[in-house]
Image (cartoon, rainbow, N blue to C red; front, side, top):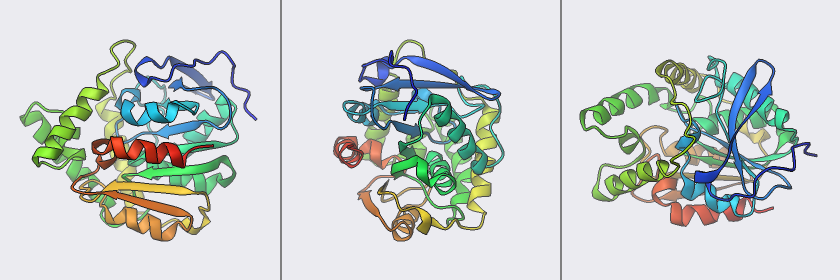
Length: 287
């Protein structure tokens, strides 16, 4: 049962979602909410270095047509206070603090990349909390080559600087004509919100998150057979950050899962193919 306030907005456009704060322990979490209030909310778990402005509105908005949606900044990221913890298990604990501070004991999760790693840890620790789970562009604890994300990320940041482009164009999308166009369109969509933008993520927070992902990649695997929730797994077929084969690995190990792989696309396949994916995700998450 939620104790969340009933004055929440009915806005269904992420570009217009009000910025809010909630304090849990020593941390003040920055978050946004949108969509009709009531029922089980969908909480979005973001990628490496992502603040609130890094969610693609073409993914968020279709889900917010029928669902109460929350996005949030992890401690030490964006406008949330505190410091990025050294492990993703601790990030899962932070997410749990945020969710319970809002007054919820049942949620759905939409996660992408690092957010999907945190979401897996959260579901394993608190299985009763999560009803349905979306894992996009992510992989399991101890997954092959996840620890190589560090070198990939730094290399593509340099490429972005050299070409005066957003590094996500390199990290998330293939460098063929379709991928380049999709990357530019995605970055443009992230700029649709023009007021009340989030605080940029600090380089120190990015580095701490990278180290946490590296630790996750080098850890002993989790027992994913304990995840019994309906799970939607999605990726592009050429993910350079979290290898696409790891999405298939998740699908094999999570019994009640379905897998969607988009052709000729990378880590950001769900953003490149948002017109196809958003309806699939919205149907999957339907109450």
